[in-house]
Length: 357
Image 1 (spheres, rainbow, N blue to C red):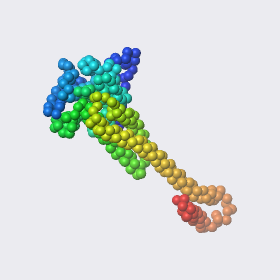
Image 2 (image 1 turned 120 degrees about the vertical axis):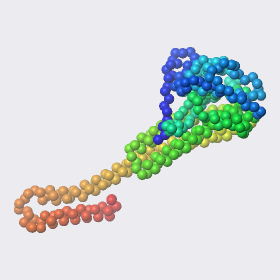
Image 3 (image 1 turned 60 degrees about the vertical axis):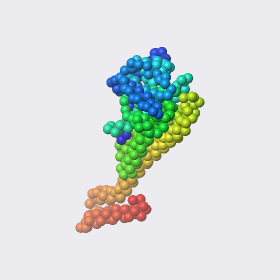
Image 4 (image 1 turned 180 degrees about the vertical axis):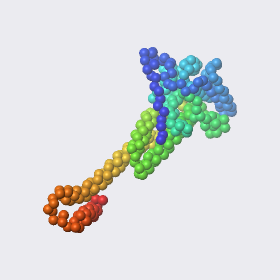
């Protein structure tokens, strides 16, 4: 059964604090924050990793795209320092440090801010895990903020190292598209897992609709509702991203963003279908249970109907009247037994002719 990690909410810590106050409200998932800085253009690639911020990372060289990735958000000083270097508004930094943000996009003067949810399947625990990823996209740089270290960006780094595709020849907006594309690709993995789970539930429903099956259906329904709530806002995010008239986004990238928009529409439609399928499965389960109950009641009714005349005969001859003529007959008892069996057989034949059994 696919399960999903429930996030611990700690929003109450921010009650009464002024807007823009930096406070990490999520669950700490890494012991030490890591900063990876990747500088690249068509001719060169340089990758560095730091555990603390000791130099100014603001990229002033327009011929180079700088990708800064921060794993871990519990260090307020680190996030605040990055914000000062790149002139990021305090309210944006506040949203970055709040892992319960709804997916959205905000367009500011010198950069775009995008926040969305990353979904991936833990192969060991079979849990659908969710984490927030925030992007700051400037004209010559991208900053990504993640709650924990993962391998989600490894395919992009490999493309940079091998110079495969257009990623080394394009600007920061194309790198932003590549990051969003990788995140959406993982949504398709989740879709396949849920689709497999629905197939298993359908098979079990046809073979043996047990009481545990209804619990599985309800659990999967809750998960699909949660995932729909995460995925649906992305349509607005990506649509705004591709339509925004901004010098950061180039026309060559808009074509890829339109393809990305088609993918998210397809994903949303798939999860809408999942909801309809789950509703159908629940109704089918209840219908099968009612059918089985009707079959049991029908069987009990037939047995009761057969035993009513037999009980009448048994009661009639159990009244202990010593003057009953049948008492003097040596074969009276076997005859009564044969009559009772004949009545039962005739009733069964009659029920079968009526197709009641």
